[in-house]
Length: 281
DNA sequence: CTTTGATCCTGTCGGC
DNA sequence: TGCCGACAGGATCAAA
Image 1 (cartoon, chains in turn orange, green, purple):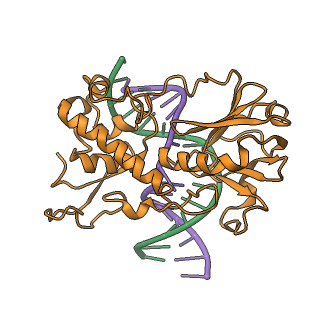
Image 2 (cartoon, protein in one colour):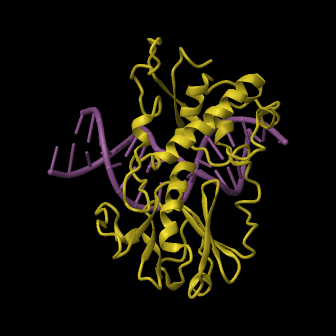
């Protein structure tokens, strides 16, 4: 899916059209995505005003004035499509098939906000109390949280023998990373994705934590990475993919000047990992 | 408890 | 041009 930077980009793009807006009409066009939609979704949303938009890990939460919140996850291919007469340059990408429009919201201002997801790995649910949800309750810290420290990582990795690549994809250890940003962070930190998580020195974990925050910050500033599915809420592409140093660059030279190595691709638990074998140990 | 592998679903791309 | 297999940014669950 969209990883943390892409979800954050979508959240920011939704704010002008959803925050403070009343939902005049809500439509659920199918009873399920990855899981069943709440049977009362339309009833709960209709007439509610969105008081704020938050992000937790790769989830977007829209707080409702009547209590509770709408919870969205974009899965692998989910998009939020905004249609608003105030967007002069509005265009709808023809590749986004309307048959994958699953949830459609219309605000009092006339904006139509559509959750579109071809693969249906995404999800839409309600937080009845606005805070707790089975999918949120066991998430690890956000990378920008104060508690995401080298010591925290060392403790989370302690005695773990699985490859650090897989450990960083575990949302219970740290929230929001996915396949792209794990590869990019490990490259920047000089750590081999195959290295056992529990066998990385504390000082290297400090470097890793810094690089995770750096790469995520840069990606957010670029509007995320657009490979095939991600669009900003405005419909524009993100452009961080042009800044990838290893992801999807198999066979290309390592971008580090002094290095004559070549980017390798390996498969770890079914997912591609990209790294430079000369720079990462 | 830790780790691995299969699985949900559709679309796209490269090779033949 | 058409067909087919591989692969895709995620996360859960069962099983070893």
